[in-house]
Image (cartoon, rainbow, N blue to C red; front, side, top):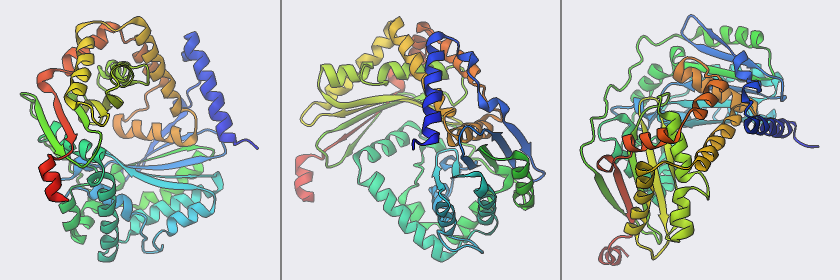
Length: 452
């Protein structure tokens, strides 16, 4: 029998495409408009959205802490993503996940520069259990030397596999640390190895007590459930948590960049990597939609300018991508090329910047503009297709903007972007003297021979 969630998702996508093409997207029902926001006395914010389109409810806990909040020790936010699964006063390690999985649910978490997010996707009868489990690890988490030692080793191995032993991992880590010289956004989410190695139990406990407080958390629940019952259950559990007296934020702002920056990273690889990054505005900025459109035109698929130029026409690269990346306090615009083995990385770089200069010097075509807008409009349907997607959308919006942005508002902003807007933001942000360039290339042959 077909999966009910997939059927509903397909129906919503199809309906959305019809409405986009006909220009009547305003007629599309936006479930998020029915969301309800409640704040407890201890500062916990809960956003609930009853939607019975699928027999699933997604419970998400958006903790407003990420790598940008770290100062003395980096990697703590990500470390706690792991430690939150390692047991508490009343639960054995991994028992939380086992209880959810045994009921057919899905449980996981992720850490970003701005947030650490935990989610449980279950059927409605399991929601009370999920609330109790999430409360348990907030109230009674095991932060011990044994747990720290175990998860520190896991994180260091993850760092080795995903960053230190991967050319793309090295590229991103170097690029962001070059782009932001002072801002805490220069810190890799997984942390610097030495900090993860040296963090103590006392440091971890202080971090947890500071940021895992109810007045620093947004709970988002969307799907097939009773909101009043859930709120009453949350009041009996989460409502007992003590708020933090003060939640510090890293105050450092990025100074103006004065001149191009270049870094070369030596790594044993066959096909070199090239990347460039520019400073861009944070999420919610008026130029966001124009930058999104620019990103689609440059790297939105096989017909985009970068892919067509580097991969299809010149056959100098195996991949070409990029676009606008928005975060709470900063943003960046990226362009990345994976160069074919034996090809000239400098020529690949020249072609990347030539395509960017073409946008800066001339208007994009109406066909390009229309296609880019449609790509962005259709992508918004992911916020309607599943309970998980709905909870993610309303949770992030409340945590970031303290309001849920209506779908119609977001579509209107995309549709209002003109060819002149695209050229304007390209000229404003993609300035040659403000770019940061990283090359990942094999070490010189003499060094490679010495290291072998």
